[in-house]
Length: 101
Image (cartoon, rainbow, N blue to C red; front, top):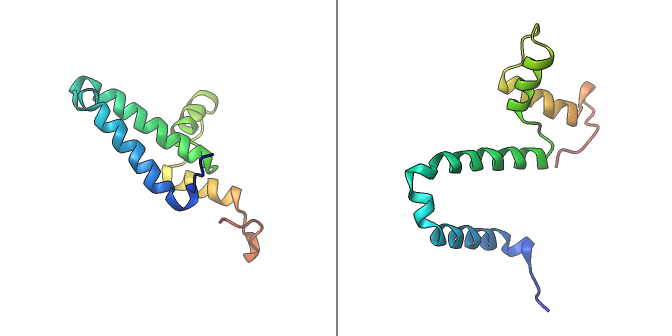
């Protein structure tokens, strides 16, 4: 039976997986015709990671505002993320209702 100690060696394992993937796909990754695919993949990974920790995607918010509320001005990115964090971890009156850790 294999014993994975992911908590201790998690970053090492992930780094090795990324290294093996990059080395095995050098031709695909270094080809200029695939750079747009790599950029799209990177954007989708960022979106996935943000959604995993409960932060909605700003581009999706902008598309929603444009489609459903064209008369309103959308928040800028900084204000949007601040609003998301504040709504997830409300701390009105100095009382932190939820732990952000």
